[in-house]
Length: 145
Image 1 (cartoon, rainbow, N blue to C red):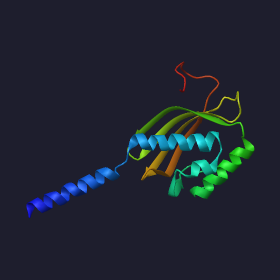
Image 2 (cartoon, rainbow, N blue to C red):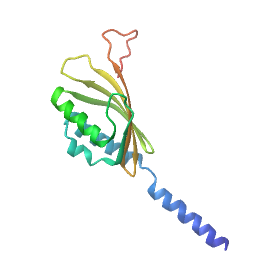
Image 3 (cartoon, rainbow, N blue to C red):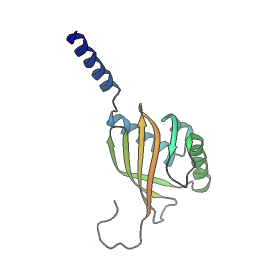
Image 4 (cartoon, rainbow, N blue to C red):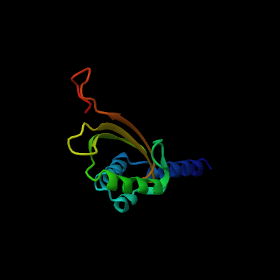
């Protein structure tokens, strides 16, 4: 009886491990999504990375996959020259964090962004961000990136 119980527990642990988040794979998914969506402004190419839902926490952005589609259409129309450069990326389980320098037009001061994505089964299902303008003068010489 104990052998059966131990075998069942080991089987459950192995199954859980097989479905556990792979941070390296999750990071690749988010990096590809970001390039396709934010730089290429290609919703269809980026959309393959969405899970069945997309929860948006940015209070100025519409929720859901259709909301993100509208955001990309607006970005394509109003800021076609916008570019975002990922300076750092971190992955921990189902979370991927990006540190980004973004410019709406070449030569503008730009903004610093921290994007946080949550994935389920290798698909993006949730997003948070914090955006800060890059100041003309800083109180230190360390730079934001």
